[in-house]
Image (cartoon, rainbow, N blue to C red; front, top):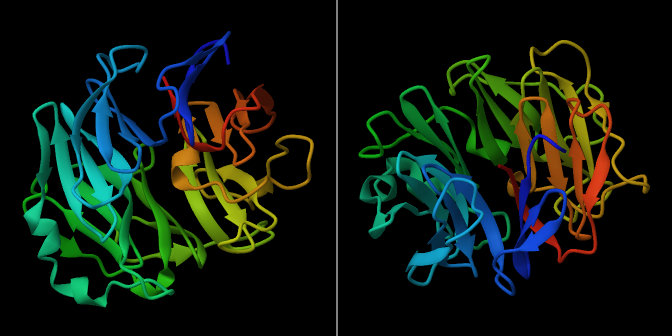
Length: 302
């Protein structure tokens, strides 16, 4: 991908993939990335780090650490980021440190949030739309704020839909989810419809959009059996088409939200096998741009 480089967060390091591969945070587990005025990362489960610039090429430093919680996801927010955590909490991080968002803890429907295995729910993904932030709780549906994170309201999406990622498509002004039920779309975040035509299985773990294409990560279930990436026109016309990625018929496990990045006509997928696959033509063709890395957790185009 000559026009851009890729940051790759793995179980044992952060790597910058371009014409060469550079190691930036050797030995550290990097599980989420987000770009505001700087590049941000979740490091070693609970630490929040930032770089000197938005490319993440240099000057990485520890900002703060979560107290007894695991950071799951990041969302750029002006000069900082929102941080979603285990036990379904939300923080805001700036260079000054972490601040817990108390309004998120006060959502009245919070007592309905749960997990199928009986453990506490988690804040798994976030997206920004015009004037609002929408957060996906697993399992707890979607929660939104329209006042900069001061107050939060549960949307009408059924909690039982078991959402794994929420994404806002800014070019078409539409909300998307990757869920246990499959691929969901909504114009307002409350009323949803699902469409799974062309998918071999409807269990989805990731969704992202580019200029003209929507991508989803599908498999048979939480174990990642028969995992694959699919694409279809983002305007909703036609069925999903499976992307031919790598030499094996299936990917080596689920592609979670952090491991799928799409921007313009470019798309990147990281795998548990330590490979990074990239497309420059909206998913029609793919090449392996890095291999023999530690298991990949998160990728970002920079």
